[in-house]
Image (cartoon, rainbow, N blue to C red; front, side):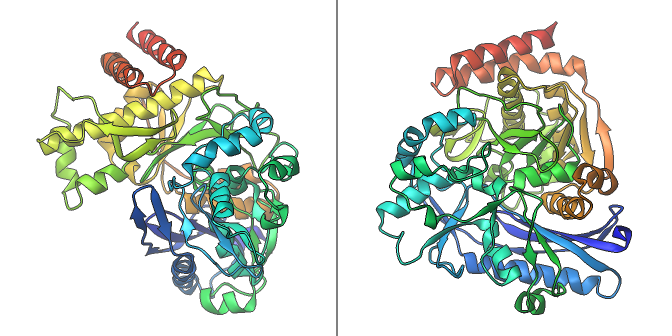
Length: 493
């Protein structure tokens, strides 16, 4: 019976890998994490795929040891960062570093990828972006590395291959940014031919939530997972967090405020955004779509600018700041959502007073989040809420209420929502063939915030000024800017 099983979720993030075990009613059983390190050099951002496995296997070993003998393992699913890829040999052994989700070394090849499949990308309602996986594959092509049986793998494929003991299919969620056709559920051979890519370099693909295989003997010894434990095809970290927040009905959204800010919602139709910032995954349940996007802004800029600060004290001081300067909290170069601007750079990050700078960053992220919803609404999405908020930034109550007030809709704060929990939900739902039902059993709500609509109106002029500043820099589509301003005028009424 499923009530006696433990469900395991693994989240390969930017800074760490986390493994989590929960009971079928959502009771946390055990959790463990290990740090990950990156190498950054200008537009390049790499990680060592061998570290992904060593960190994951160690975290899983801690989790399985903590619950040994208490429950059987029902299944494990893995999520990772979207657009992170590497090359392997035919047996799955890594040949290159992992090129991370925000690595834009192949940015000049995005136009080539876009032009080769423009009709398909239009049907799928997105544009190829500089940091996506298909341009990276073209970069490897031009480096002469697609030879001797080279295979593209997505970040979670490294883990699922090691768990099963042989190369397994990629999941359709991670394959999106590599150009997988989510409508016909196949690789687009005509597009690959125009790009001079051999289809043999790409993995087979299965839908998220399907069975990839079972844990093999070698992985069982390293992780403590029993041999034969089902390994379930996962989803990207943004989708995983959405499952972990229980946002599975049309009109519901989840905002992950981690190193970056990612939004995902549920729609009955495939949304078409002419700016190319919104893209949609196929939902693992029903005939639904999961639209959204990932910004390059988020809480990561706080880690960079305030590495050793007392964040509670900074928050208290920021709450007393009345005249908050405009800020676009972008630590690096390039933005992906709510607009695509490879040359965008942050502003308002050099404010001398720490409390004012911290307040400006928090307000700036909140304005980015509101603008993301402006864009989604402009594309035809139902953004009436509620919005769930997850990620490390969601642990700050003042920031949560600020975001709630600026959005003007209820915000739910789940008790334990995280991407790893979403993968546990997916594993449980795959077992029962009812992912929505698994989410209702497993996801628990901590509290619901209600917006102060008076403050929503007070914040509206600042949002208009924020939109104006982005449009003046040439980053924001004029039609989107006008739509965003019009929505704030309704808040003023």
